Length: 473
Image (cartoon, rainbow, N blue to C red; front, side):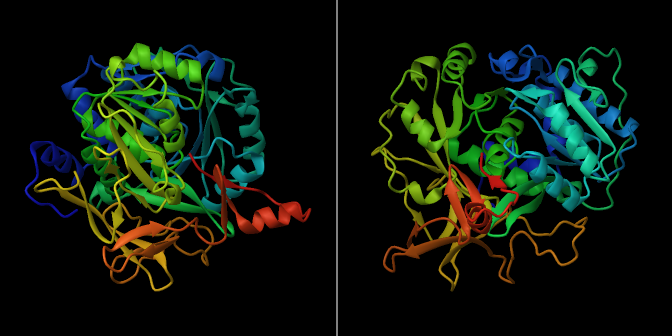
């Protein structure tokens, strides 16, 4: 990160980032706000997973995270092995992911719409050793799905599940909420900066199909800090997020800002209008995180209302080319922050001004908060000779999977000698103002709510059986 004369809030965020892991940042909030509510389930959790809604204080969440980490190590998983998750957007998913990291393992959240063929291909590719699921999500029995996946992935030795009535062969984790004394994991010692160590793997989608993207703790904290600073999220704020974990958007807009501010993260499993309205009334969120098209529609309802205590709406643009032509934000009393998300490559945030229009993008450094004295440079934009957007900054993933089984595999994003990574998004640049206009999705992919590999779609239309993987929120 490039640091100017930072404000006290920026200084606090930066102090947490240097050598800190995501777990280190969480533990600081446990020390500071042990009895405050850290995590809250959606009110319709029983309809989604069959389990009653949970509300955990920081102390309770910390205890459960330790219990999850201890059990994973007790099952024989070794440092830096990969644990995949396919879980509903609930408290269980957050404590599971943080438990994996506390155990010294690497977390790999999988998109919820992936089914058996998608999961098998991904787990085989990276050599994952365990799979953790919500027992049921809606009408899908994910324990049964996980067992079928494990039968096809030789390295998988453990299938773990949250929720009531997990099936035979699945190791239940719900009981850990009631365990008297959680068994802690062994201490993890890193020979290098622990923040620079691989933490979470997400999946992008290219022309040939899914692409694994690995980020370390610092890169994830940098992405979350960009959103937190531009959105002016106050310490101890209540964040209501409808973005799931298996993407940079879900991590950088919801989970990591919550860790940085030490507030409350209220989780919404997308998308139930009545449940979302009920959460707005019950949780009184100060920040709502939703996909941009939905945010703009909700702005015309009572859901996103300052009467509920709402101060900021963070809108994720999975198709950033649509941001410039979006409708105006009509509620001036509530801040609206656009976050263009360039697949799994990078994201940044831009708060709308008084006219309600999206702030224009321009080549060069992007700071947070924008136009503020001593602002933090969070990313830099450039245009490649091929006419695509390139990004440079601390959140850009810089290394390939060290545990990649395919020695011919390419890194997720090619980073040049100048530090710029090509996102693949075509763009045009105004020669006078240097304003950037995103012209569409990367070549070889098609966006229909989710992104699909163009070749996979063509083969499907031609009647050729093929796995159809997707990427999105």
